[in-house]
Amino acid sequence: MLNVVIFGPPGSGKGTQSQKIIEKYGLTHISTGEILRKEINEGSELGKLAKSLIDNGQLIPDETITEILKKKLNTLRNSKGVIFDGFPRTYKQAVALKKILNKEGRDVNIMLNLEVDNNELIDRLLKRGQISGRSDDNLETIKKRIKVYEARTAPVIDFYKSEGTYRPIKGTGNIEDIFGRIADALDAIV
Ligand code: AMP
Image 1 (tube, helix red, strand yellow):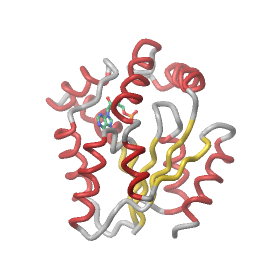
Image 2 (image 1 turned 45 degrees about the horizontal axis):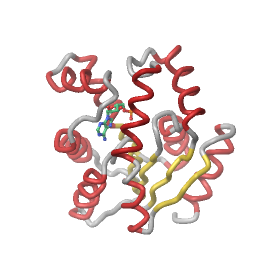
Image 3 (image 1 turned 60 degrees about the vertical axis):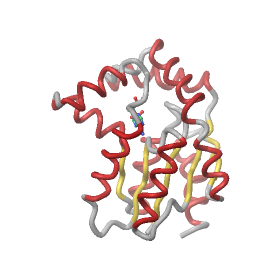
């Protein structure tokens, strides 16, 4: 089984590259952001909590999102592996993910960090906002998300460096070139 964490700031291309990884490697995609957006559309209690936090650029509490992830993992059967998109987003979540996977004799095999500078992130997210309709793709919320990324999410990098599974990937240029770099990193371990 291949367990991949796709990581990077908001707008770094995690969702886009996840789709390409799924096509080539047949992994199961778990996007915690997508799970939350579904809850919001359904108007559940969790959705209501998530909407207030997401629209404000804040993270969902670690315990809540980790429970959601655990439940989702439990529904998977006969998966060739998982691509974790948007989880872990804090150091605590990274430790929790390791614990969950270790219980099944598994672990994260590789963490791909898409590196893109802040100006390009803002440009990309504003453009995406015009077509995605995502309520968090506006300038004010984008700036908050990048700040939250730097303060709370970037420390996840240190966790995977110490695990020896960290791979930085240049996240700029065209989508195919970026995917080429990701495929090289994955082919080296499968
Ligand atoms: P994404 O679709 O990954 O950009 O996630 C959209 C938003 O959902 C984020 O800005 C957070 O508010 C929330 N979210 C998604 N995943 C997590 C997570 N692992 N921990 C906390 N909040 C999350």
